[in-house]
Structures are given as structure tokens and as C-alpha cells.
Length: 354
Image 1 (cartoon, helix red, strand yellow):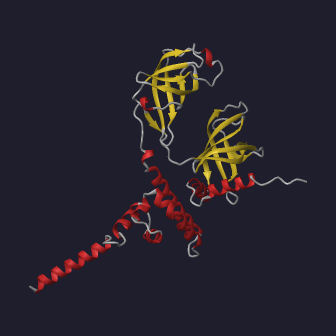
Image 2 (tube, rainbow, N blue to C red):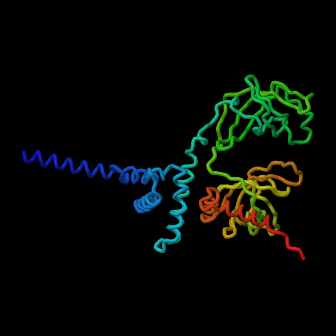
């Protein structure tokens, strides 16, 4: 009888310990929090730090700090300030902690439903979707979706090269590429059913396709910007049988119109070609300067013949610059609002008269 009582007591104690460890009523969910943290690649020391941040921010469900963009945005600012203010951490440790938290933020971002909605056929396209249309003998052109009906895809006649108005597309087999915002790139093969040239705006009818290949899935979050930048072409010199890269002293001025930690799109004068390498230099904020080496992966036209749109992929960028761009993209410290407010204050300042 005594043995039975002891066994029951032990079971009760173990049950209470497990109950408390797993959370209990109004208690911290230790098991879920630590197991999820280990799954995400955090050390025990880092998990304890995140636990402290979750408690200080009074998260109703602390473990959601690992997957909720809303909860992460609420906690990242105080967490990063604590990390940067900790005198016991080396610069390398601070950098590592910051990188891990920002990686977690990016992972949570791409788990949002809007990034999971892929399309299966061209019936899902929307008007004003830009298309890149390639034909083996004609070359590559730009087009836009005008209408999507049950029978065909109505698009503008492909343009962008000299003599595009005189081309006969009817019956041609074409390759089509398009990029869906917050999704990925898609390619497909289709056929031009009919070309309408007698309308005010020439149109084409494309056959629908359900054989879409999803490529270039977005891996970074881009935001629209209006940042001024300088860039310098990178050349290669040969001497004594060896090649050495050098940065030209010739400066080009550009305006960055969208930005991510992996690259940007910028507007600048013509003269730079696809696959050219450049050094990019710009101020993200008054105190954060970004310098990166990149490769021009695509060049497209604008409404102004003197200006081109350049798509730049970063090939070499420092970890601090990368982190600063991510902090700016996710607006962790409200830097984008501060810049806009400063611009507004400057614009409303009265002009001094002599």
C-alpha cells in the first residue's frame, strides 16, 4: 500500500512539473517556445533572450514571435536596442544576433498567405499585367494584358523594337514571361490566334495555357523608394597575364526606385549595358551609407529615351549594409516615416526674402 501511495505521489509530481513546463494556466509555454526556437536554429542563450523580450512585450502567445510578422515587428525594435546596448556582446555577436532576427522576420514574411497564391493558368491573369514576348525570328518585345476572357488572352501588340508596327504575328508560336507581384516569375509557350491592326490600339489574341512554369520565386521583400545614388562602372585590366578589376572614376547619377537586400531597380541615363558590373553608393538615411558591388541583370526602356531602368543584383555587400537595408525595408525603427516627415517640414518652410 505504501509503495502504491509513493508511485501515485511521484506521478502527481511529474504531472505537475510537466503541466508547468508546458505552460499551465497563465504560465509561460516553456516547451513550445524552446522547441520552436531550437527548430528555427537559435541557441539556448538566444532563446532565453527572446523569451525575455516576449514577456516584456506581454505577448498573449509568446511562441508566435517565431512566425507572426505583427508580433515580430512589435518585438524587434526593443530586442535590437537591447542587443546593441549590451556591453558584454562583441560586435560579431551583435551582428549574428541581428542577422538571425532579420532572417526570422523574412521567413515570417514569406509565410504570409499573399506569397502562397500561385496561379495555374493564364485565365488568372489580370488586366495591365506586363508581358515579355519572344519570337524566334522577331526577337523580344513588351506587351500588356488588356482583357482576359474565356476564349483568349487579349494583349497589346508587342512593341519596344524598331519596326514593331509592321510585324505580322498571326499564327506565330511565342514564349511569354511575366512577373507577378508578391509571387514569382512565370514562363509559358502559346500561339497568336489573331492580330487586330485596324483599331486605334493594335491588339493580339493569344491562346490560353495551363502549362505555366513557375521560376524565380521571390526571396526578398522590395519596397518603393526615391533614393539618390551614384554608381561607377567596374572594368577589368590585364597586365602580365593576370586580370584585375578596377572601379572607374566616371560617376553616374541614378535614382533608386525599389530596393531589397539582394538588389534594386534604378533610373539612370543610357550607356550601361546588361551584364555590366558597377559599384553603387548611396545614403539610406542621414547616418547609414550603403556601398555595394552589383551586376546589371536587365535593362528596360522608359517613357524618356534618355533614361533607362536598370535592374541590379548585389554581388558583394557587407553584412552591416545588408542588415541596415532589411531594417529599412521592414521599417523596424520607423526610418522611412522620419524621412518623409523631414521632407514635409522642409517643403513647408517659408522662403526668406532679402
